[in-house]
Image (cartoon, rainbow, N blue to C red; front, side, top):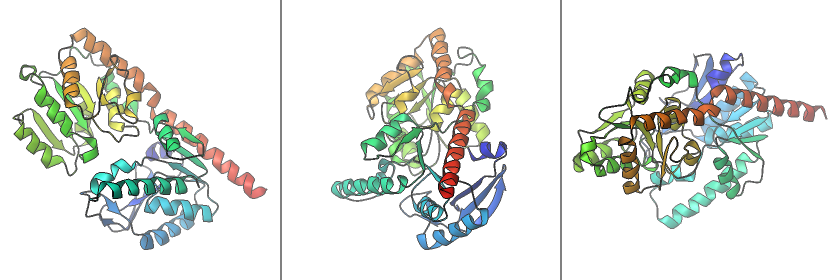
Length: 370
């Protein structure tokens, strides 16, 4: 999104935690990236966190230097928190997009259930308090908007897809599914390998399919579940059919989408799922957990299947249906995915956010004039 806005002639700055911990500034694909001082969080293998006493002055200096027309925050944690307060203090309008769900954090907090439930309630309260101070709130899907409303949000919320570059996968749309069908069949997962993604359910489901199908799984991504997934495949006797590939290049990722027969996302904490959108854009059927925002990306039986979350027997059944599907039916299902993903083109997302930015900037000018 930042690169797309920059390509349209907007001056775009991104503030984010530094992966090395040390602050830096660089220009990447037309976007000026400001990496703020950060520290590794010991409870998660990859998360970097920022400390308030370091972030506030760094972000304050950045806002004074850049003097943005609008600030768009994608979170309400430390950088996002000060994006709200420091922007409002300077009269800069704020657009806020929520991707947060307490369920994404719970697996990394070791505490009794009662404590976790209390923490979840506090997390929703804190999210409401911060986000409702924004001039405009968006979420990736209508289901995500409904989730916020169910948890006490009273401000208007607009659903705007994160969007993907459909042109990146254009060459895959021209392929004939029947002619390029993987032999043996392959299911693909792409995402962070953390507990709430439930990639282990794919391994369990593959193990429950008929061995004569020869179904294999490609699991792409990094995280604390990488080694446990390999171990589970060994325990189920299918290590030769489960390929835990770790993080791969963009080129290899596109090839993984091309190579697979279908895509699976068993996560129970998705407010959209970019990986699923990419699979749809690659002209692939999808098998998705019937949870949170995933159901809006599949028309059950048309471009793939839903399954009850965590039900590996049902998941194995959906895998088997696709593996045994006649070539002509598979091709029809694959083409249907293109209809579902068409409305998620990044160009529409960019149009929408430029419209939102123009509106809040205009309102801020009118307010200051009054």
